[in-house]
Image (cartoon, rainbow, N blue to C red):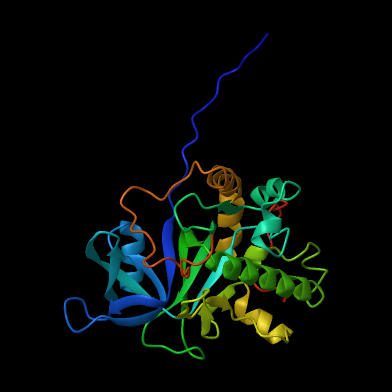
Length: 304
C-alpha cells in the first residue's frame, strides 16, 4: 500500500490593510500636532518592503495612529495613509449567504471557505467575529482626482481584515459586488466573454458609508466602510472598473493558495504575521455585543 508523503504548505503572507472608522485617533504629520479622529484606510509602515516601495512611489503620505492598550501606555505606530477610498479586486467566488451567522452555519461554512473567504467566530473577550478577504489593491496616485487620476495596481495579494460588527459591513460590500457582477453578465459582449463575470474582474470601490451610532446603552459614533457601487449600473460605469490584464494572471496563479488560506483562517489556525499591529479600538465594536476560475484568460476591456 502506498502511503505517499505530504509536503508542508507555506502560506504566502499578504500585506494587511485596515479601516479606521472614526474611533481611531491619528495625526497626519508624524511627530507633529494633536491626535484627532480619523476615517480611512491605512497600512503599517515597515511590514513589507515591496508594499512600502509601491505606496511611496505613488506619493502616499505617512501618519501616526495611537493604539490604546488595556492596562498599558498607548502605542504610537506609523502607517501609510491610503485615503478614504480605494479599489479592490476581491479574489473570491462570492458570499454564499448574506449574514455572518448564515455564512458560518453548518450547511454553509464549507462553501464559505471554498469561496476564498476567511471567516470565523471570535475567541477573545468582546469579539463577535473575524473576517478577512484577499485580492488586489488599486490606489489613486496622490495629487490627482477621481476624474483625471491614475489608479495604480499593486501586483501582489493584499488582505483586508476586520472584526466584530465590521464583518457585517465587509460581507455586505461583497454581496453588493456580486450584484454588480450579475448585472455585468447582462451587459458584456457574450461572444467575447461567455463565462460569468468573476468577482476579481471588476474593482470593488470601498470607502466611507453613513455615520452611525453603534452599541447598546452607551453608543459610539462610527463611520463604517461600505461598497461605493451606485444603485444604477451601466456599461460606461463597468468600463471604469474593468480589471487590468495582469489581474487575470495573478488570480489564476493565486486562487489555490487563497482557498487554502481561507480554510486555515476559518479553522483558527491562521493569525496575522508576527508583529502585526492589531486594529485600534476594534474595527467598530463598542463592547456591548457578546473562485473557481476556469483557467481561461479573458483580456483587456474587449468584453466591455
